[in-house]
Amino acid sequence: MFAVNDRISTTREYSEAIEDFLKAVYMIQRGQERVPTSALAEMLKISPSSASEMAKKLARAHLVEHEPYRGVRLTQGGRRVALEIIRNHRLLELFLVRTLGYGWDEVHEEAERLEHAVSERLIQRIAEFLGHPRFDPHGDPIPDPTGDIHYRDLIPLAEYSPAHTGRVARLSDQSPEMLRYLAEKGLTVGATVEVLKADPFDGPLTLRVNGNEQVIGVNVAQCVLLAPEPENV
Image 1 (cartoon, one colour):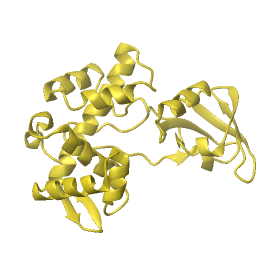
Image 2 (cartoon, rainbow, N blue to C red; image 1 turned 60 degrees about the horizontal axis):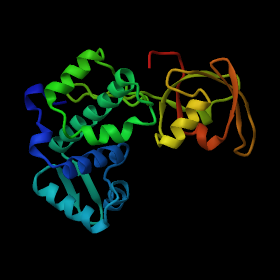
Image 3 (cartoon, rainbow, N blue to C red; image 1 turned 90 degrees about the vertical axis):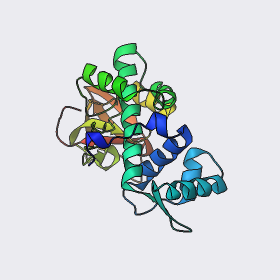
Image 4 (tube, rainbow, N blue to C red; image 1 turned 180 degrees about the horizontal axis):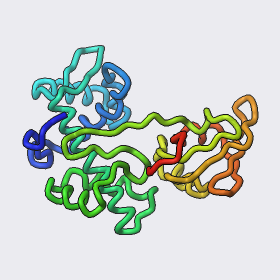
């Protein structure tokens, strides 16, 4: 995607607000052509007018393309910055869990604070220390140093039929409350899950999770993404 020599030192050249905006565009833009500024305002908890002004500013800096009433999309330069911040964030989350004993429901806010401050050298050292991991504690892919990112074809647990087995690979809802609930049910990344029974009309699912029977609602099951075959997640 981009060469190592083309990296931007984001923590020196851009403000946290700009980095957060570009990261938000990337997170929402997957799967759609453009991102409405209203969606960015909601995600970033800023006013719609502030989101529009930021979009215009970043368009002048050639980090996004902005069309009034149609939304924004990242340029190659904007995507590069967004992926660097996402790489920082996800490596920091994994480091906090594996090395400092943080719970997977605690790391997001800590990583949000640190992702803008760490140097490229420190991130490289963290990646080396962790063995150059491909996924963070919640199963999200970690961009590599060149910006490549490995997405998997995963299936929501809610779509699994009885007697089918998969392995938890990613959680789409990473709110602390949801993560704590999933942990209580054993639905952590890497857990083996078999659907025993699915009640009709969006009723609950009865599961076997690592050998233990559990019952969850279909809305929760929609947030749990499974790999059809066991894999190293």
